[in-house]
Image (tube, rainbow, N blue to C red):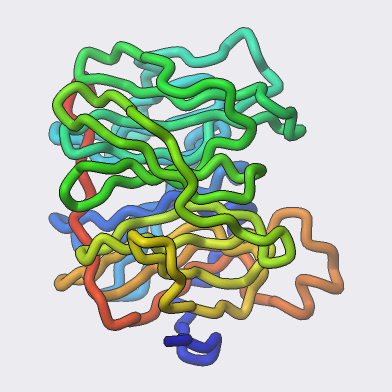
Length: 296
């Protein structure tokens, strides 16, 4: 099945530099996401169409809700607690502060509420990054190294596998996963993405266990079965598609983020909605996002 660009709605013309990391907040019935180099958080309310923003003051790669009502973000130099009401922040755990040429990127919480997020270089440097895990005591552990561009991450509904993208490998990989300890086992490739199709970016796993993978430069999101077969495609009217997440009361709406960064005037004229937030109904449902359970 192919969802054509004309069947995808623009729900917020936000002109994000790098929109990323969408997460649905069921208690608020709003979508939360980040504009990485725009240094802000954004909330979209589908009830009234409004977008609220919060300036974080530093590059922010990912954000997750917490059980305490605060937010936890993966920022340029570590994990940052954010009070969404006051905007106050506190760095709870530093990451790679000795490498100012790196920043944190995409991330997500596992079923036990541990926050996984990785890094990348501002100027992409091979094998100069890593994947980290923040536990309930705000301890950080290096889970995977070396990495070049740590990106999309999520888990299978039965918690047996962790899906992961190191973008420059042009692969969607999976690891055997042990949920109680949060440890990784054997790594293998589920699907290779031809470079001409775009760079694998953010992802989410739906209720059927299939992986929805955004393609930066490819202008689409692909649904990949656990066997590694592409069975659905959502085409976007922009090229730099970054990530996706299911939302809405029934989790049957797919929200898709995008980026306008580094597009020249001619490209922006061809794709005026670059950096916008999109939505479609792909015919399947997602799963609730896991909050961070710990020190926030």
